[in-house]
Length: 272
Image: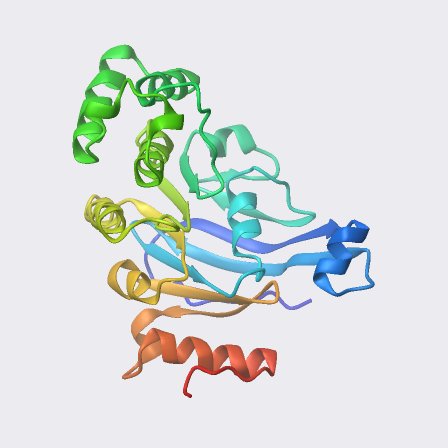
């Protein structure tokens, strides 16, 4: 099979994803929900792309397209059936432990233990990375202040608001100050004010030169923070381009639906 080539530019690649695939076995209940007689579903089908150092890469696609599965493979939470991804020189297939020490991963599916406090959880996860106490405490003070967590530091998670839980999750994902940050729907379910705090922080991370992959349904967020965008439809990467090249004079939303209708063959109500 001919190797897929995506636009990369001249800058150094920090992440290279090469034809990763993942198939799941479906239970009878899942087959019914999927309206499928097949006992398997290919969630990700030979997806390839790269991300340059200091770049913010946006991942777009409808629900069930394979975005979360792709990011979970990059975060070494699940293993690809085939293909590989190399993050800062480390393979997710053969060097998963090294990858985990180089990345921060935030997903809306992360569930914090209700009994513990933000302060305890931050210290616990810092300990997993072997971060020295003085460095841990200095970074915790900075992050807690940035997200307004200080006054809730000793409050159990079960008593926190949804927005505060998401802030705590975000902070915990960054305890080791990673060079690569992977965010799966970072503003999902947040109120407007909390979503703005998260968006502003993403912009700060971009200014710091962090390399970021972010999946989201919010077109305006991608337009605001991303340099390039990949569009996944039915488990396949259909487009991977510079944002300006992709959109031209059109909005990202308009281009997305044009591409979706062309690839899927389905009509949407977008222009109606």
